[in-house]
Each structure stands twice: as C-alpha cells, then as structure tokens.
Length: 145
Image (cartoon, rainbow, N blue to C red; front, side, top):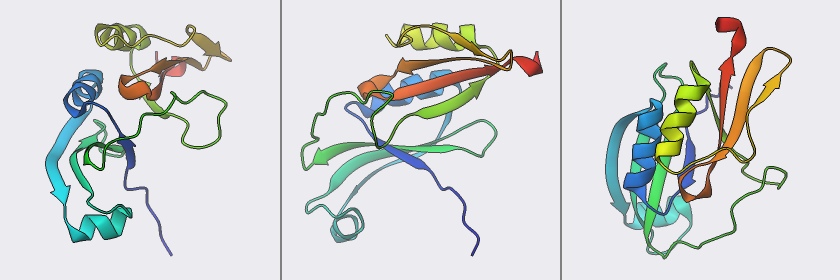
C-alpha cells in the first residue's frame, strides 16, 4: 500500500503571527478556513471542535504545514517542548542562507536556543523557538555553496 506524508499540523496561539513567521521564511499560504461541526468533532475527537486553520507549503511543493488556532474548546497551554522530550519534536527546513533566515526569524523575536553548529562540514544548523514555542530547525547545506 503506497503512503505519502500529507502535512504536519501544529496548534498555535496566534494564527496570523505564525503565518507571518513561516511566510517570511519562504512558505506560501495555500488556503485558510474556519472549521466546525459534527465532522470535525468526529475526525478530531473533540466535542464542539471549532478552529481557524491555514495550510502552508514549502517552495518546492513537497512539504506542508497545517496551522490551527482553537476557538473552542479553549486551547490548553503547555510548557514549551524541550529537544529531548518524547513526542512531537520539531519541524525542520533546509534554507539557502542560514544567516538570512536567522535575521528573518529574529524580526519575529525568534532566536536560536543556543547558537549555530556545523555538522561535519555538511550542514550549518540551529534550533530556534518559533511562535507558540514551536521548535524550528533551520539547516544550510554547505555542499550546495
């Protein structure tokens, strides 16, 4: 049976701010909607499920992020995920220019957790804390330079 990855979904505090962050990094918005009703209650498993959603896509067309902001039930705040915690870990992007991408992230108040590392002269990469505490990895492939 063939299988493909459709998207990665992330609940956020502020949909507009999160869209601004990811579109500034180069993703495009494929669409936005507000969803509720019996079908969402059933599919998601929450009674009264009501959310604003947006689907974003990477420039190559292969990666998609679904962002959603809950209107009902109320979103539950959690502690930001740490890199060594079990569960959803991070979303990673390859970028052409890591320094430029970090400057864009900084304009949104998003800074590296510690700094930029180099993996075997192959990648320069860093983890940063994005909107709603999302861990975002940005990596520049040094072999493409």
